Image (cartoon, rainbow, N blue to C red):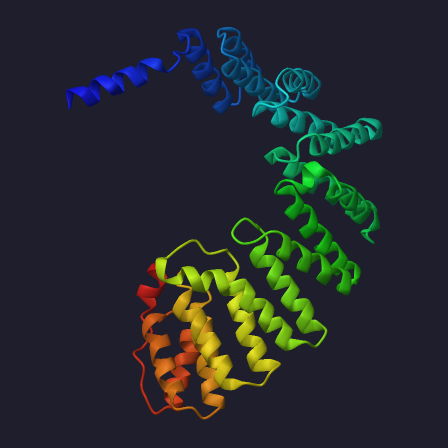
Length: 358
């Protein structure tokens, strides 16, 4: 134990100590900011930055001072400080953030020339290093502006097309974002075949789990296929979407946010498009059984029970029973009690107090 303590002391001893003046001014700035004294907070933050020779801490003080000035309503002073910080530390964490905040402040201006300059700076931020979080936010802001100026999405699509051609974009996650934005706008524009092609190319180029649009991309593609009347292609697309979940199901691994939505859509297609009640019932049950954290589980059981009841499958009664026992509150539970009545069974009454406490 003594050896561990000595080693820990050596490690901790290597950590750079911040000057006391830095810590005191930073804490004073935080107190002033939380009390709404933003100009005072800016002065303390600037004093904190001046009290240290460590570049990271100096930039932290400068950034906090600029953001306090924004809250104080002094946008010109804030922009000047953010510009200086962005130029001084262009690649470090506060550099892109400072450039983004300064550009956004300009883009929000009532002055058309300053507003245009802000959007030009946002575009330059995206092109200079698309890997950063501020670059992602900048893409969304620019696209939103172009959408509002041209509801046909032609300008937005043209701009996104220029971005996707950049090597820096194609070499990082920004490529997924840009392609997903293109596909969404192509769909809204009515260019459904083009939208399908974009989704297919993106899903083929970037596999799961690296592809952040694996779930919503497959879901959008399946809906497009269903819309043009190819229900079996839609089911196949959803099967590809859910394959990673199937492989990881027993280990409890990460699942993408919309896997359950895809499984539910798959069941609906079997029920409504392919008219296959047995496959539909099994697919609805899968949502309940496999997606343990999903809010769709009780709805899936209700749909399974309805499908089985419509097919005169006696297993419907057991599904209604499971639904009312496991999910006694909510609209599906009311449907389950009615379903059990048709089965000649009596369900336990709803415990209103327990349901309110959930």
